[in-house]
Length: 462
Image 1 (cartoon, rainbow, N blue to C red):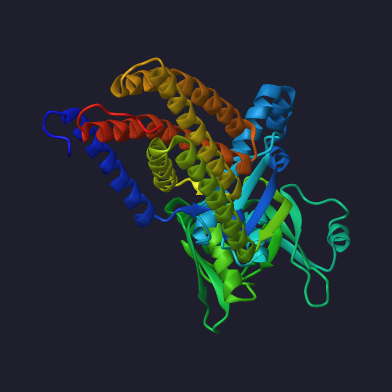
Image 2 (cartoon, rainbow, N blue to C red; image 1 turned 45 degrees about the vertical axis):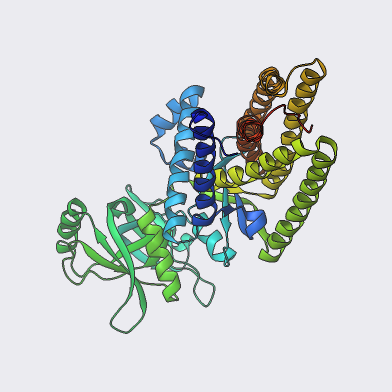
């Protein structure tokens, strides 16, 4: 018979389990489970942040002071790497490539990992990651010169104070033009408020930028006083163009030189996301084809299904009717684990699938431990309800100890492991938590429900 009002505690437990199952099913069906790069396909980069570039850009006295203080130098490096990570995240999100954060990688402290599922243009992405996008606008003091040596010879071999030589990218003939520019720059990339790709009057791609209010007022004053003179728009220490100032410019200008609309859009996106405080070098690039990811999913599902079938068969044969309860708890464990991965926005990777399969084995171990304790109590002459209560009570402490020690081990894997190992650790920890709930709470509720609906002397099929 169905439990009546005389067992309100059992009814509440059953309703709680039902509510959790419904929430879990909604999480699986209503939210997309995020797949890792090894399952979904895409491209990953291991980047090395050249933080020494930022150190060399500091004033000489500041750089010397940092070099003398190891603690301050380490803090400076961490700050540069953190700034670089934030800029790269904004840049990736601006491209619409992924919401995956840029992660720290390795033990050196200056390496970052970027994983971009479904990315289809690795060359463009690599260029976006490596480009510092330091935009500057200089006043031109001389040029053009055919070579650096020619520029130096024109000034007696010694550049005037407050000037430096910059070159244009090589032209069709392979040669660059050199210009003498005055420092500091009149406008920097940090002065920009916005940047967008557009076309000019002759339908050529350009990048239109807008300055902040303070920078616009400063730039208007400079351009009004230098009408008819040349200025240089410089990106990453390369001159993009040397336009003549025809009229006073306040807060809007154009950057020419893009060879395509896509190149102009890339420059605009990079300018909006900000310039990198230091150079970035790609140490490793790895591309995973979607077909390889799909094959990994199939193989993982086959392995999981085979393992689950073997486990369920063992439970049903060896523990008879009690094996049905264990199977129910096992299936619910898988549902809760997948729902937890969805709700926490965790990324399921191939090692994560291995963690799920390992969780199945540990769930069986928990059920075996509980069932054997119940059988011991039955052999001691206790009734079925008393044997259940004693078996679950005595096994719980042991289960808790084993689960806690495994969670601690997973914590070390998460702290010191690679991203793939971290995915395994996260999946295993979630599986352990759901396993403890299903093997103890759900399985006990199923036993109590079965005993409650039967009259008279009850024998456990275990």
